Length: 162
Image: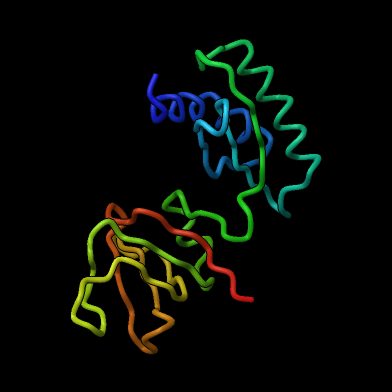
């Protein structure tokens, strides 16, 4: 089974279990690492994810995966918080994190940079999702706002400044 198919199957199995407990499934990764396969679940919950949350989800999901057996090969299950640079994976995330610093990469060049080239990476303050576009006030061009169609977003994460 292809990795994308495994991820979608796991997402469908795990999502109702997490939502029933008030938790969010941020992302699912299934990849070969070293000698074996790793299934990694990133979760979030109001107030933030604790180690106890990860342990509880790991136990519940392990039982579910044991019963459903959706993955043909051996793998290690890891449950984690999405981290400070949390990915924005759902349309609702763009409004939820409005006002925060973000880094968004588009699939296609969206505008010309200072050297006349198309630009794919944008860092700035997230305004939100408006009419299907991710709206960002750019950090490096004060007073300049970019709108990226949501379907053209390849990757979006919260950005942390130290």
